[in-house]
Every structure is written in C-alpha cells, then in structure tokens.
Length: 187
Image (cartoon, rainbow, N blue to C red; front, side, top):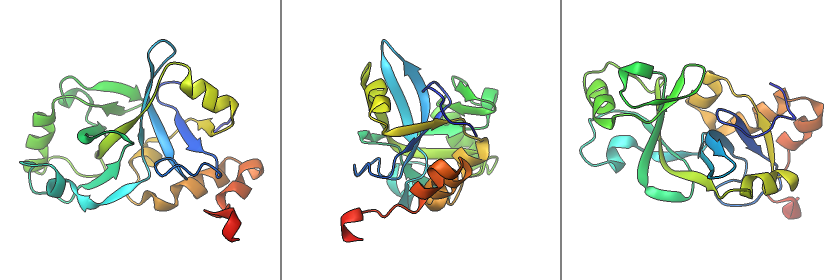
C-alpha cells in the first residue's frame, strides 16, 4: 500500500486520528466515484451497525448479512459493493473484482437461494458525499490519507480494528496514529 496518492475511484480514504466527526472518526472510506465537476461518493467500510440486513430492510430474504454505516447522506437508502460482476446486471466496476450497485432483485434472489455469502457482498445504509472541490480542500487540511485498498480490506467481516492495522502497514510515519486516543484531552 502506497501513500501520497490522490483521491480517485477505487481508492481508500483513511481519516487522520484527530478527525472527531461522528461518522468519519477512525474511518476508512472507499471512493466509488470521484469527479472534480460533480464531487465524490464513497462508503465507509469499517463501521458495522449491530443489526442484520433483514432486520432493517423490509422484504429482504432471511440472512445473516451484516449491515454497515456507509455515511451520513441518505441513511434511509441501501447501497452495496460485491464481487459478482456481470452476474448482477447494472453493476459498475470500482477496482479489480469489486463492483457496486446493480439490480437489487438479482442479489436478493441469489441470497434467497444461498448462492452468495457475506464475503461476496457488503451492504451499507447511507453514503458519504463531497461537493465539487470539498474533498480536495479536506486533503489540503490533511484530514485524509489516500491508499489503494485490497478486496480483502474492503470486504473484511470484522472491520473494527482495520483503521489501526491499515495505518500500521503504511509505515512508521502513520503507525503512531494507530494508537492515537479517541479523545486526547482525556489522556
């Protein structure tokens, strides 16, 4: 994983430790779209909601799929990334073998038939969005580190410790951040 990358589709934003926003504190955001004229769209990949998908989404097949907080925008809407590619019509490639969106009825059918598991699809409530130029401003404020994620990192099933472990892999300059207290004043 390298650093000094610029935001673009398929890259991962890792929040710096002093960012205390409820949604983005110790978060990792997968950029699904990044466009200077239209802004950016991403999903927080490491904030599980302690509810199962079928407990929140009406008429969804019975399953044990975890649900994640994707961000503060449209928390009433469901978003998803997956490794199913062309099996899900209308899905768009993010990077490598990772796709987002597509026909939800097809995913629901595959889940109902036990043809797909949580290691292949990750569901989110809400998304993270930036207006044109906003993410670039946050980059100059050093709110984010940009890195290239792996499929395993994005689809991790137990992501609570990913923020710290990912920072440690980026090298000594960032490893110290991994142990940064949630509230340094209380330290």
